Figure 1 (cartoon, helix red, strand yellow):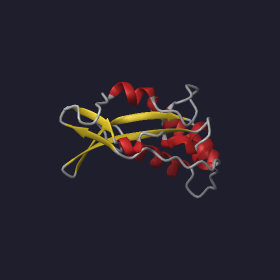
Figure 2 (tube, rainbow, N blue to C red):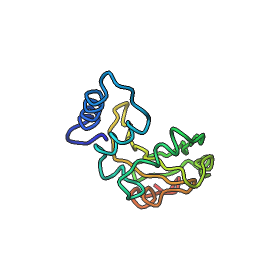
Figure 3 (cartoon, helix red, strand yellow):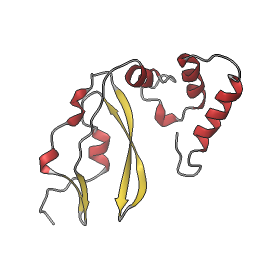
Figure 4 (tube, rainbow, N blue to C red):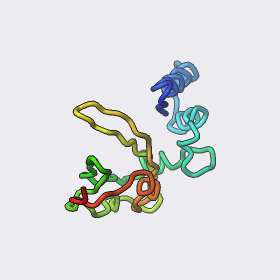
Amino acid sequence: MQDRQTGDQPFIEMMHDYLTTYHNRVASTEDFQRMAEKHMRPGMDLEKDGHLNWVLRGMVYGTDVPSLPPGLHAGRCGWRQDPAHTEDRAGSVGPLFKMIVPVYLDYDGKLAKLGTVPLSGNSTSNELKSRWRSVPAGSC
């Protein structure tokens, strides 16, 4: 829910709404899901149906544990994948697993969020491939 202009404000507003709505009441997982869907941002709608079933299926009810490839490096002429880590590491999840991965740039210990990339199943994201240019090691 994080936004470049408002930071965590959308999430904070959702949590205030949730706490106000369910104060002194028992709330279920589905109640929380409905509240999150009420406040969700367009980039969160991975299944284009207005629901967050993909979150619960993968992160609450499922047992899949994704692992992302380490070793993505930026050099002075572009991005490259460390040759020792070129295999698709998301293979530990089933085909219905979905998640949104934040992408950060670490520049001398200072983190800057570049954006997010939606991932589905154990395939490599075409969005990630097309957004950032891949440069073979030693080509600069």
